[in-house]
Length: 216
Ligand SMILES: [Zn+2]
Ligand SMILES: [Zn+2]
Image (cartoon, rainbow, N blue to C red; front, side, top):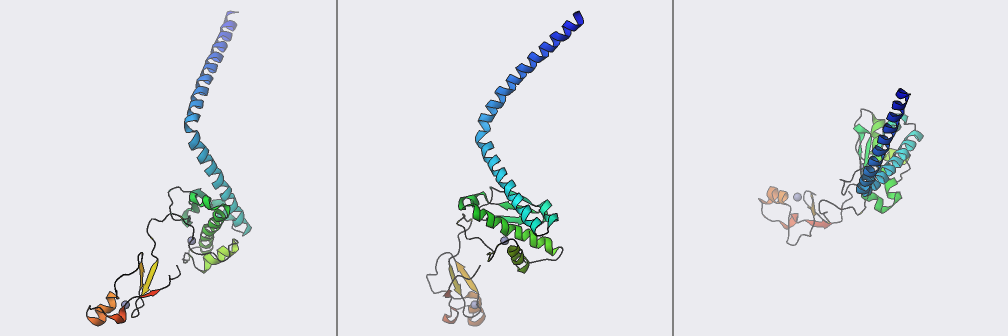
């Protein structure tokens, strides 16, 4: 029958068109995949990683009875970070980690994750109360998250934007600490004290004395 045949023809034609389209798309996607392969591989790995870390963070928080924060917390790798190992954004319940951390092994990634998570936890527990970034509340949160003796700053050799001061001097008069990248060569005295007590003239009495690096 004519109408039926027409129907079949149309079906064939459509099927054929579909196959052609499929071939076209297959070629296109193969070409595209080849072009974006390296990028896709990196971002999938990084995403998978962050998802695992996020799950770890959620499990830790649930274990401490913080289901509300556990539901909100997010963990991301941030390739723009340089010398900072991690950052916690309490308002967004977000933790950013420096991808270079992975060069120092899983334990450093885990330690930094917990350090930053402690900031979120301390903030969450404090509610509207303002707390010091690395104060008592944070230290307690660190202990709760299994970090004992956590320092406020990491000591990983991540690149620094600024050159670190390695030489420290103190004024015997006012106890001001002078931080220097290079050691002092000439005799140098505290300007504030020399101005106040010696009319701005150099006084041996206020000469800077070398001291060990103060605790950060
Ligand atoms: Zn911190
Ligand atoms: Zn002084």
